[in-house]
Image (cartoon, rainbow, N blue to C red; front, side, top):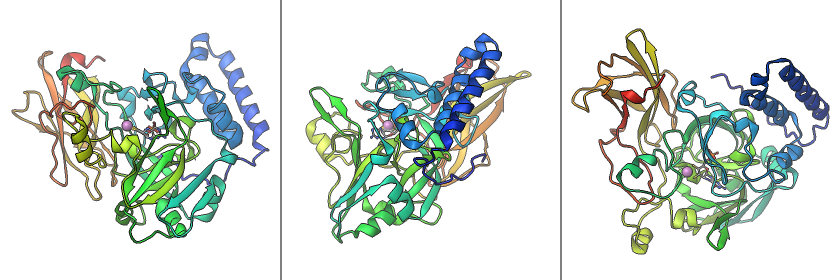
Length: 433
Ligand SMILES: Nc1nc2c(c(=O)[nH]1)N[C@H]1C(S)=C(S)[C@@H](COP(=O)(O)O)O[C@H]1N2
Ligand SMILES: [Mo]
């Protein structure tokens, strides 16, 4: 998989790393100077220098540099490859051909979805509290959390509920970030398990939900509130030795989280829409009801008219549905080699059974070849080689998962533009290569 398991040492006290980091950055700059000017200005060169610096700087310095002192609209050089749908707050998705090059999404290609500015974070001072229906309330620093509880890692896909939203706009305009097929990524997440932390706090028998709150401030008209949400506490009962029910993640792909991904700690909820994986996690509350936070009580619900009563009567979205997209095309002699991803419904034990391609609008279908890398709560890559005789052909893609869920031909419009998972249709004329 190309990703080594993370070392869990905290970087805060590694003062010795600083001269080394400085040296590496200087070497990068010298190397960049001697390459041609175009390369010097290329984003990848900056990203390389940025990655080298951020992975070696002590945590507190790295976090200050990447959060509070930054202009809100300034992109982290490590994330320069994304296409930003909104620069502030940062909402960016990767180029699709890059996205399907790897089963584990490299961090620079992983989408960012933030509702507000990154909070100012000093890792040494950051605290996570555990409160509510527990025997004893607890407060942890990040260092205490990773020292007190067993380390846990998992690979899982995080996907935004707004994925493919721009397709709804073709029916009738929806508000919200006009995402294409890119707000999805599969990463190795590491940290500690929520279940272990809750065991330490002692959960009351009547508890039914666990609330999460981030340290960010989302501005909505005249009010400001933190991003938050919750999960049913029963989600924790589906965990096993390889997959936590909810992970409190400090690392992504073996490195401390980047500021944009929730440094120093976030939740990762395998199988659930991205909105439940709360970044910059500072508050955990155990309760007998779902969180009253705006992002679970009012939005991220599948409503069709959007009336207040419909919103109140509708349950929050938790699991994501089966989905797939065609992401890259390459000419091979007189044929086209197509690649994409397919995401099974976010349920334990659910995998992709088939990905089918049609060039006659769904009359006949050809099976794509599925990639070998698989895992619970993970996407699967696929490829197919086809002859496309006519440039007016529309290529249709649909995936079916092992629990019998298939992408529908069409989906009804919804005002928030959530969960678009109809067949992915790409006109052959758009396969520009
Ligand atoms: N605190 C906080 N957590 C958050 C968000 C946010 O705006 N603030 N956005 C959510 C949404 S909608 C998604 S899809 C994921 C995106 O995670 P990423 O930016 O690391 O890809 O984070 C979720 N967690
Ligand atoms: Mo999202």
